[in-house]
Image 1 (cartoon, rainbow over the protein chains, first blue to last red):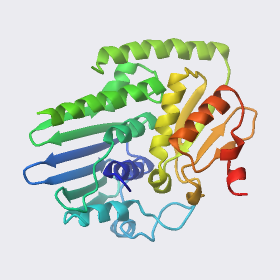
Image 2 (image 1 turned 180 degrees about the vertical axis):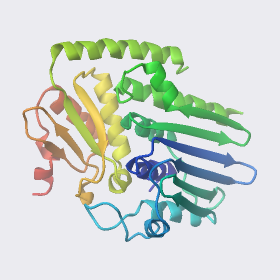
Image 3 (image 1 turned 60 degrees about the vertical axis):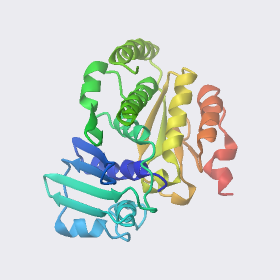
Length: 181
Length: 124
């Protein structure tokens, strides 16, 4: 993947497929330590210990259309190649927590990329699910909650093109603010 | 500022459009984008974005955009499928943002399938 935001889009699809009513996506950047943490936490159906081992194996997948599953292994590799780390914890009936830590000064660090497009895509394409997105840079952060937007929209679908574009634009402004100071 | 007031205005406009759509009673066109690892790695996100922006720009009212998982032809990703009531499904393969714009203008607006982008033409 050319951007970490594409890995996030991909990993979040697992949460959606696991029936998670709420998925939280967190991106925290520490410019002093030169570290970036990406967390994807869901309350989906969770996995057994064996399944957790299997999803880290590129030759395993739950899908039936083909025989390899690359999502988790690609994300894990992206983190580990920077000298960072990757963890995945899951409990059946409770949910799954995926965390990847990146060393941003590594030459193998993949840029975060267009997180705003990733979040607006996930949120708009999954009307029946809720998402929280938190992004921070050092001590500054913003939070976006799809439930709050749905309340304002009062039945207008999130997949309406104008709504999807508003979400992306809104996130862009919030992100720009974070990096301004 | 992409303010909440702006979102409220978008909501009101969309509500009016949805009401008009319902009154006409026409079944809309459904456009589905493959969003599994294969599709995402191949560039499905910019395709979805281009579709959305073009549909909005041209004010196409009877189109719903949705995502799906792996369609099963990973080497031809990004793939989009167009479902139109009473017509056969059209599958477009190896899509780009530019091709997506053409699919909106030619197929969704004018009703002409872009034959050269379809799975049949590409796999021949």
